[in-house]
Length: 420
Image (cartoon, rainbow, N blue to C red; front, side, top):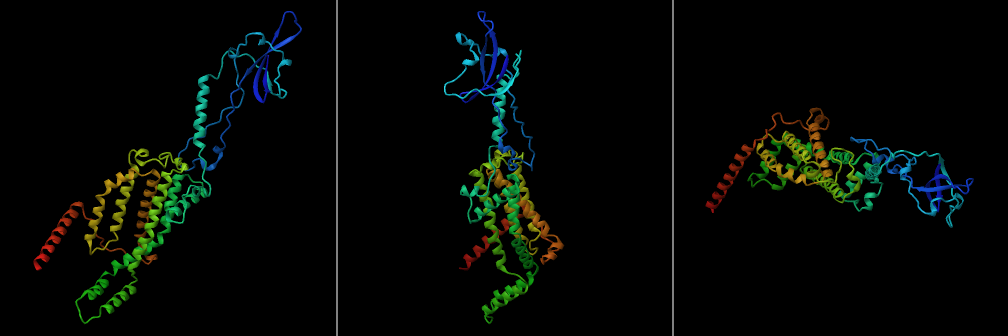
């Protein structure tokens, strides 16, 4: 008995030859031909070797080994039984019209087996394993221009943010989770000079508050002999001597707001389209960046991190406040009341957006901590912080201040009506 591969009519078949003898002609040998289909060879997917499709930044499982390409061992129990006169066919008569001559690819002596090592259930399990492996690596990596082909790139802030994320991911090969973190940090660094300039201007306004208030009182004084135009010129000269420009704060807001909106809407649009590559984040805790936060993060870790970060940022901002005007800090408590609603809103955002939000809050807090250092303020020519910074009032104190303010406004309105 011999076994081997025969190519018949362009199809590769595994053939087993069984010798038989006939009584009338004992010298003539015939062979029974049994066609058997071998187990298909499943090669390793090509995308499994691409660096960008593997995770080097988070926890990842080892790649699965492709199945062996050796031919199966078929037992004699599973040979099909051929009844009738075609059971014994001479080897010389095996031919197909229009087919090429049989070509022996591999030959070996096959001994009958008593059991089949590959059962039907194991073959089905192997097929399911192959489908799962191919599904994990069939998402191709992005290339330059991929987001442009999807219509996501433009010269507006949203399009520029998406272009920067594409450039960072393709250039560095980082997974998309860390690409969003790096992209958000990059745009925070872009607006850092504007933040420093705004902080310097605000610190000088507080530091030179007495001189500025004296000039403003002169302008507001009911002195008919003084020229209002001349008083405005003197106030502008005083601002210039002190290095204060009221337009700097307005310019800082004008620059930071488009960048913040661009980062938020840019990542949100990519997650909602979605860009298929974002479904493989490279970070096991949050594997799909396009999923809703309430689904991918059932414990609300990201929204809680955002709320804690915002509270910390408000405390750091209060450290730079004007100690002569503590009533302004009651506004911070008004923002604190919106935290529960903010957490609910954030839970309905995609995971990729929340990763960017948490990164932005962390970068803002880090910037404030660094700018509070005396050495840094001296290098950047920023006036020192107040010796006795104002203290953030409690919610009850803000409530009492609010009722007091409303009572004063009501009394002032009644007084104006009586004067009429």
